[in-house]
Amino acid sequence: MGRAITAHDWASTPLGAISGWPSVLKISAGTMLQSAFPKCLCWGDDLTMIYNDAFVPILGRKHPCLGIPFLEVWKEAAESLAPITARALAGEATFIEDFEIHTTRSGTMESAYFTFCYSPVRDETGLVRGMLDTVMETTAKVKANSLAQLRNRELVHRSRNAYALVSALVNLTFRSGRPSEEIKSEIHKRIAALVRAQDLLMEAGATRGLLRLVAERALEPFEDGSARITITGPDIAIGREQVTALSLALHELATNSIKYGALGSLTGQVTLGWQVTGTRFRMDWTERGGPPVQIPATQGFGSRIIRYTLPEAFGGALSLDYAPEGLHLSLSAAADRLLADDPFAADAVLPELPR
Image 1 (cartoon, rainbow, N blue to C red):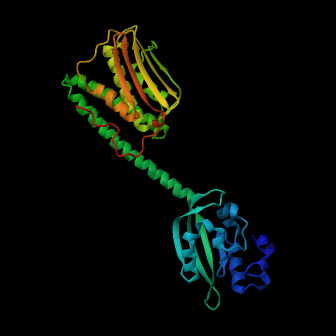
Image 2 (cartoon, rainbow, N blue to C red; image 1 turned 120 degrees about the horizontal axis):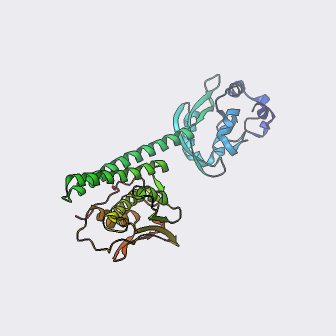
Image 3 (tube, rainbow, N blue to C red; image 1 turned 90 degrees about the horizontal axis):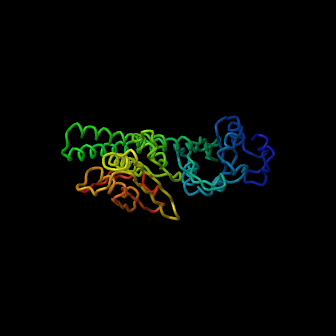
């Protein structure tokens, strides 16, 4: 910037030609130019700018702006900066860390963060003649810290939800009154289904997952190599609550199918498919080739997961058809609900289920 400063037409600015600059201004400008730290010297009541090479990245597209008043260059942030510059001209230094500024330096409005010190510059008589802005941009650090805090909150939230889910799994399973070994086996399998869902979320960034991958992971334990489970549908991203609810629901559907439906027969077939048509999302679970279907006399934990948790997570409507040729489940919801769940919502993933 030394050559640019020398070549600049300072006579057209309040500072006048360099030959007429006071010694304190020449010395301050020379010291600033030799610094490898971003610095901007602002002189006079209008804070006419002189800056070094290290300050150029701070300016972005505002460079070059030699000889222009500081608050004019940063006019979009003048309201927040003016009180700080006023204190410097009054003789008071100010140090601020991670100060947010809304700026158009990149051509569009953005938030940027800076740690800086505005220091008064005095002449040999002690009179304040200007201000030195010594600054370091901290935007990347602030955003990284914000992202880390976001992830930590997500982990805490997910841990609480996982605890609530496991508690519900255990409590509701034990209410069935069946033999303890059978209950123990069911609990282990249900927790395993929950773990698979959580693993998938961790791989996908903790807040969403692909529907196809969710379905494949949930139904993988029920595959026996005979290709009796068919999964069809486009790649669709769904939210965290939907991943968990769908994983548990598919586990219960497949478990019930082995006990009472198509997967319990050598010739049985299950098709899971979904599609988005316009603004609507639809998913179908269809069983064929199994024993004649009967409407269950009682409603267990698995039925509650399917009937209430699944439509709750998708914000949609669910229908169950116990046709003699095989169970058919249909879930319909607005397509814009697929990623509508808030990653930091206070609600547990598992809503309160009817007793």
